[in-house]
Amino acid sequence: MSSGKYIVGVDGSQWSERAVEKAVRLAGDTGAQVKILYVLDWSSLQPIVAEGVVPPPIDAKTEEKRIFEDVLQPLVDKYQAGKVSVSTDLIWGEPVDVLHEQIKQEHATMLFVGRRGRSRFVDILLGSVANKLAHRVGVPIVLVP
Image 1 (cartoon, rainbow, N blue to C red):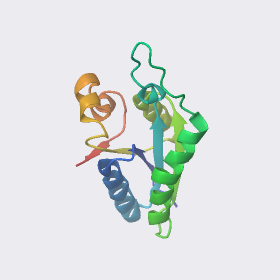
Image 2 (image 1 turned 90 degrees about the vertical axis):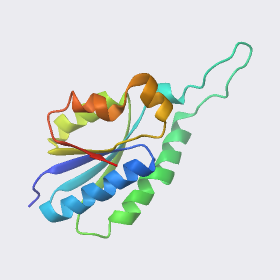
Image 3 (image 1 turned 60 degrees about the vertical axis):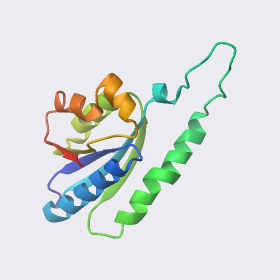
């Protein structure tokens, strides 16, 4: 019998990979399931446009395939052999909103995220996803260094 569900927000960074490792280890002790969730924010894929320069179009299906092959599948391959039930999902949207909604929909009991993401500049400019989540979600958050 499962005793909860842990959601892990990943972005392909080393910090998010450590968050998955921490969640799987704890789930092994508690019997929880682990859902690894990559939230693809369309605005983060839009290049900065300079006048007179047209950026190449970004193909959504190609980007989804790249993320599945480069980020999600390696994590599944690494942890599927263990005793913990691990699933993945890729959802388009704003990371904080999607993670918050997934916590509610999945009745998650804990959220794991890396302390830093792929871009320190974006964290400084916009505020970190982890900080925003701490103010919105109603479950314990584990910030993994």
